[in-house]
Length: 545
View 1 (cartoon, rainbow, N blue to C red):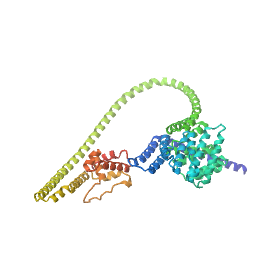
View 2: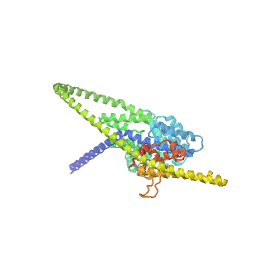
View 3: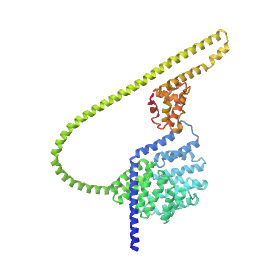
View 4: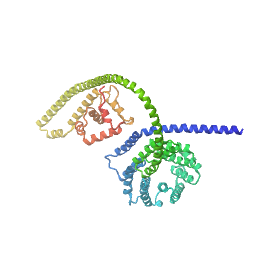
């Protein structure tokens, strides 16, 4: 019975290891896929930041609004790019220093201290935190202040490993963690994280793991908090020498970092250490290289120093493995060289025949490409000619009709003015000359003719424009057969752009508007577009049918 139980336990353990290995294999595949998308994820992050900046371009902000904008941009850059995060939070610290607003100064100083600490400027971070009096700020800011004090001491301990100062910094970190635990809400991230790290340092690693794993299910992968929690769980499992779980959480943390474009990270470097211990030197080197690239992009001196310490170890192992591989390669090359000499004559003769056939094939392919290209050019020219003829016919007729109507209106107005002058009705004559109704009527007539002519040429124009806009920003489409088809001012601007009239001043002159109005409309239309960068080019490609 005892032997049977032992066998069952061994089988279950083997199955658990197999499941864990398969799970890690899938996670490695996901991580590699995200690293391949590094440029796209970076570009997506840049577009998100650019949209925030574009949203306030040209707007005069109050000091409070500028403060909020700086905080928001700092939050975007804090784990993405050091110098940008520093720039925006420094503006708030400078503006609030000596202002008497202790609450907001504390919030800005804590953020500044964090960005200074992650890049290794510990003394500057400490001096800045010394300017904050925790007794004069709210509990929420106290939590942030104590958390940053704990983090600063933790960073300093990383730089003081194997020195007499290491334990001092850990004790200080524990002290500030305890202060956070005393005032933070028990279901908050600040409480959970500080409680877990505190009790882990006190030796309760299993309880710390349970605390973070229970909280992790509430978080979304790709967020900075998710990355921090999984990285911390990997550290806890490392203390328990549970390598499989350590590796799994490092993978989850690295995946979250890559998906969220988080460049201030430590998981890839730690993962390369685990892989190096397993003898997977190629993968260890590849992930370490990625970690170096991201640390350089972010500008973190601490991360650069950490990966710099590992690089010689991996390179030494990598060089030894490469040397062994080279020896095996040289042996096989010798064998292959003998075989190659025998096959050389056959290969040369085959290549001669192949080249002749290949050359003939290439000529045929080139001729087909030229024919296809010319055919496409002819089709494009025909399409453009059809469209040009349609536009010409429609607008010539509209121009003649509009010119005739305007001449008739001018004649009628002239007769009316002459009659008033002849009858010496000077007050009525002056009132008629002063009135802008005639001009406004001509403008309305011009707009009606333009709208009708344009929609006859481009009947699906509004629907096609709507396809380029986000769903909530689309224009109303009139029902088929409605009596009057009208364009709004925004649609007239897009119509002129479709006719290749893109200069703001020219558009303003045609629509009898100010250039500022035209610029504002164009900016708002771009902001509503699905693809902001190519919106106007897409409008110019709308077909007539």
